[in-house]
Amino acid sequence: MILGAGKGTRVRPVTYTVPKPMISLAGKPVLEFIVEHLVAQGFSQIVINTSYMADTIEGYFRDGSRFGADIAYSFEGKLVDGELQGEAIGSAGGMKKIQDFSGFFDDTFAVLCGDAVIDVDLRAALEFHHSRGAVATIILKEVEPDEVSSYGIVQLGDDGRILRFQEKPAPEEAVSRVANTGIYLFEPEVFSFIPSGVEYDIGSQLFPALVAAGAPLYGIALPFTWLDIGNVRSWWDATRSVVSGELAGFKLPGRELRPGVFCGLNCSIDFDAVEIAPPVLIGGSVSVGAGARIIGPAVIGPGSVIEPGADISGCIIDSYTRVGGVATLEDKIIFGNRCISPDGVSIRIADHDIGWILGDAREQGPPNPVNETLQELANELRDKNGSQVLL
Amino acid sequence: MSVKVHHEAAITVITIAGRFDALMAKEFKNCIADLTDGQRTLIALDMAAVNFIDSSGLGSLVGALKGISKEKGEIRIAGLSPEVRTIFELTRLHRIFDIYENIETACASFG
Image (tube, rainbow over all chains, first blue to last red; front, side, top):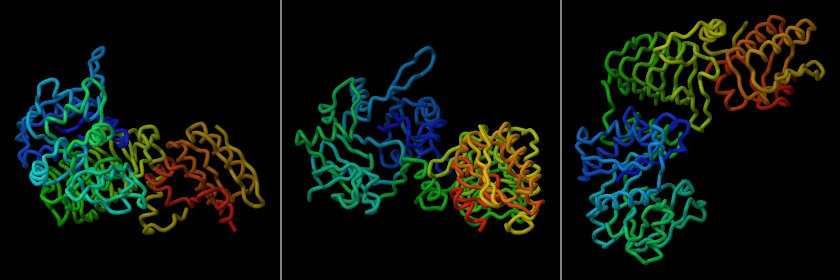
């Protein structure tokens, strides 16, 4: 089961446009990475619970056959006056709903959060899980000492039995450095601990219930890549990591036209007239004008137009974005008609009437006198190599 | 919406509050014109209470900079909110204007 029903509130404003599992890394939804990994590990029968923007997920994956999987969905919500309204019932509540509906979980099963790219060895985890006779096993990962306050931390006994949970402890109070990754293995017996028809959460309710009952709850710390999209900054960090080639086994899309610079088809770029420093991923049908500057790690979405003179560094830019010639974008995410900083500061571009800076590449923007003034100033800036403008 | 002016020795402090849009831009332009006529061309602009700026606001700032500079004066800006700062960075105005954390440091910078 993949948990895909959450609203992704901590990744707003990105999740005003897409549900969190469909946020892309280098052009590929996080959920697609997860499905592919599960299939490669032998977990090809997958139910995804959906709620918020369910259509986006269900329309992309459909029956899963395109991905070598069998996929079905458990929608949590209702149709009211022709509109789908999500009604999430918690991670364990979602599991129970599926089990009550069809008894789908008739053997050992995995439950994963739909918001982190992973390459964990699930077979090794399964072996451990069975060897301990566990009813539930949490897959854990060691994190840096100064990162423990971002995670649910777990204390293990010598045999891997879980002794204690700590939610986001201060570093000096943490009982360990192994964090809950939101990847679980369960036996069907676990459902006797989950009530039907109520909101129920795995971490805050099911696990304490298992501990209280003395049920065999275990944890195993494994080394693996875990790119979690918990907030805007972690999405930005994860994208930079993927574009830099740090995700083992992931081949960046497009053709490598220059070392570390990958381009899709139908791009209009004179590499002798622009400055592009890797790693950069450019989608199909992109135009980059002479004198533009793109410094990686950067992603330029398909159909985008980077006008002559634009200055872009460390950015994720959505498809069909026009970046004007006097624009300077440094460490920004342009997505869903917003300019978002990794620390979460966000502006709606249309509200500020700066269409000559950022807009939709398919739109002919109206002329704006401020544009001409700034263009003059930008020309002077360029001639003086960035020194103060003399007017 | 308001543009307030007070003088501290040779420096004029202009304080703007609210939305720096077309209406505010007009008031600001008039204010700059008055100051230029009165030979008061060392200006510290306090934008700590500005919660929004659009192209009209940007245009009036750039126009003010050009006009004041012709008179050998200076405009220094203080107190940008994170959102307004983003607009300045996108449009490269952060390279054109001297920007300070608060009005006190902006005024002190005139020496």
